[in-house]
Length: 364
Image (cartoon, rainbow, N blue to C red):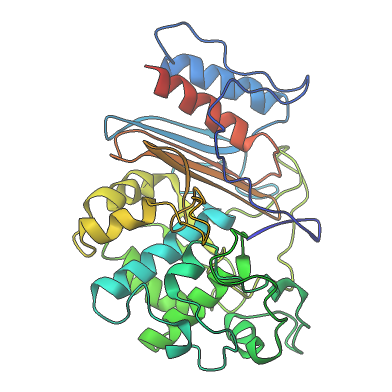
């Protein structure tokens, strides 16, 4: 999910972002020696950014498959405990890779196929010729309509509401596969499809089928339908890095998931990063399709796979933005290197911070 202040915010999914970066006069890239980033230098740089009001949250760097560094700044919520490795952050649109993992798991179990017509499961769908793969790659042609739906009397929208709205949804403006159009609605529909495949709520099936088998200890789906509204180490979106900065409440759209809705802590980063190269539940050839570009009808590549953008032939990345959450995840295809930035204070420098660290790692 990517939206700021009620205005739709199309995902900055970092195609070609690994360059020397700056952000006006307030943000400057890391000043590092040619041999690459020393742990102490990265930490000092992040400390400076925090003191300047530009960053709070968690940063995790993996090198050669191991955790090379972790840095924590700020508090979990206004007046709350300090951020730690156990603090769970809203991932916003970085959640899409987890929804994709749920689909790949269902395919590996033989419950559906990537090229199945989605109407096999979403019977009310009026759109013809749309497959699961099309939704995953944002080339379905289905309008991104869900944020414009009326809100039910309960006060918030849910996954089932989006599926139920399909018969009256806007008509397609493009053919299936004609254009890449980033779509949060598409990933909510993938969550609805998984609920029908498994006969379970999305939160429950993701925990049982994906998170627990992957060995994740502090990753979960959360939305306004969740039984527990709060829990230890949950971070709340904040309007600033100050310890007493005001919190940002969930909105009427926070009953959905699939496009967003995942919370994760730094302690799970290495384990999840490894899932994408060594999952025992999803075969390598199937998992690798997540890192293959979509191809349009005119044979142009989209540089987007399943929940991952493809900035170059050796790396994948994705960013996310919702309420105060700003998340960025970059990894090498072999899983040896990764940079993950979790932020919950509305920072506009999250992608730049992660990209600058990644650029230095990549240069070595």
